[in-house]
Amino acid sequence: MTAVPPPARLDHRFLGTLAIEVERPMPAGVTPVGNRRFDMLRGGTFTGPRLSGIILPGGNDSLTQRADGAWHPDVRVLLETHDGARVLIYYRGIRTASQEVSDRLLAGEQVPWTDYYLRNAPWFETGDPRYAWLNGIMTVGVGRREGMMVIYEIFEIL
Image 1 (tube, rainbow, N blue to C red):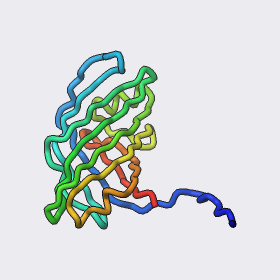
Image 2 (cartoon, rainbow, N blue to C red):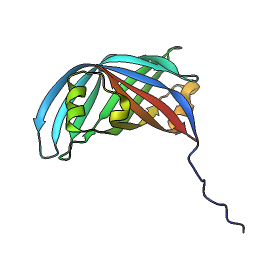
Image 3 (tube, one colour):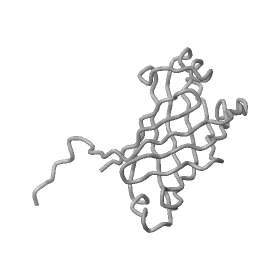
Image 4 (cartoon, helix red, strand yellow):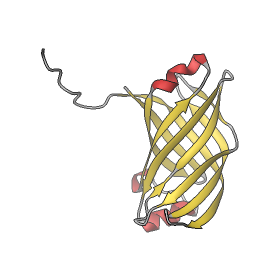
């Protein structure tokens, strides 16, 4: 049998832009796990060639800051597509930055996305047959903060 070489790189396809507005950051304090914060999410949008709609209000982000300063977002939001389907989007990720950049982001300042590292791994879940293909894909997001907005460019891994 002839061996098939592994892929030389990951192929991807643009899925869409996820933009979520943070309504209210609420510090929860330092726990044995780390510094915890709970952010209520106001809503937002998802805009892409195969999937688009609005992020409904009421989502949340349960953030944990590690001892080395890195933040781990843990987000749950509900998307209502342009044609009425409901899609749960949930992801974990990581944001690393210098303390100075982290302080500026927390203050809502505009900081170039190249000054920090913000990535996530979104999963999609739906019972709507029109979007069942979302249940079987893996995606990654490259993120940035713009004031109280968190924006990710989401790519499907092929």
